[in-house]
Image 1 (spheres, rainbow, N blue to C red):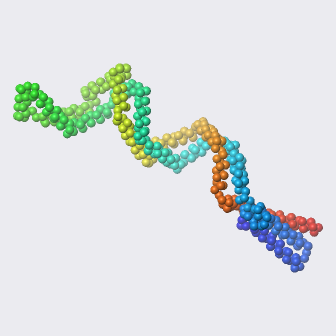
Image 2 (image 1 turned 180 degrees about the vertical axis):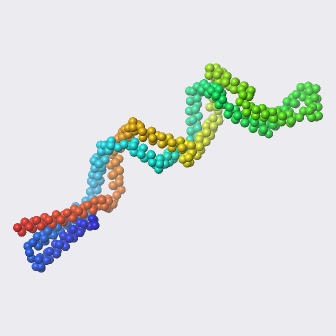
Image 3 (image 1 turned 90 degrees about the vertical axis):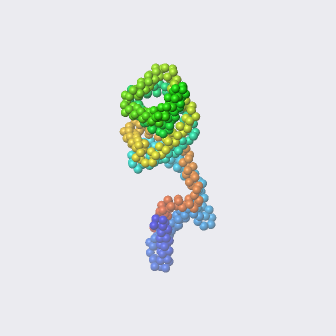
Length: 423
């Protein structure tokens, strides 16, 4: 209805003009007051038609000779119109001063806190972080990374006093008994090795070799050994089994007894060694330094680092699969703690706000011209018909009231003029 109100007003004016003109001419209406009414409709028709022409001329070409070159104004002047809009947006509506003034009224940190406190937004934020971490983790096991880490490791080791650190750690671990678990692992590994068929075969080979060496020392010893084997006095298989069984019993006893003599003796030796290193003993420190240098310079060091990085990447991926993993629980708890601490620390909020506002102001000053470029590029993508259609869609209904006003005001002026002439 709004888009047709101008047309309706013009039609009413024209119908009224024709009706009263005919009524006056045929004599059906003869009083002078009807001429005043006729003059009003006549002026309303003229005003409505003039405003129809003015409004229509903005959006399309009116095929009237001579006058049509002054129509279709928007399309013909789109260059000036575009630059006018760009100037209005960049220098008036979104000028640096206007944006800075608006920024000064805002509290960005409070808005960020409010955003992150909502569970759904937290999930979205964590999801983005996950994607970034996965992308970074994909490159962790890159061979170049292993090479770079080895170089950095060598550099750091050369600058660190690892001997003193290891000595202090070793001394503290032994005194506190933290190394007992390591002892148990070593004994378990030794027990597994004792039960291995390869160990028994190796031990039996050594016993046979030792027996042969013993028999070669003299004729008497050789004859005695041969006689003992022939009558069953010496059975190397039984001897090997007894030795392995005794070794297993020895290891079992050492595992269950933290004060076992062998463990106590080894602990005492390691403690003396740690104290010698800590006191600056040259030979002891050199032993540790040689071990560390041997590891870092070994050809397999880079391969070991590469394997560690590959395992680290797989672990990271597994930890990021769902929110119930230890890593994700840690991240979520820390995120909530950061939000809570930030919410209660107004001083930090003010500092963040100042940083955001200063940064935004600098970016606005530096890239303010891009606002105009965006407006200009958006308008350049529209052809004349699309540009006119968009403008007419936004303001066309309001322009219809101009046509209505033209008809109404024209009619009132026509009536006043007719009344003045009549008087």
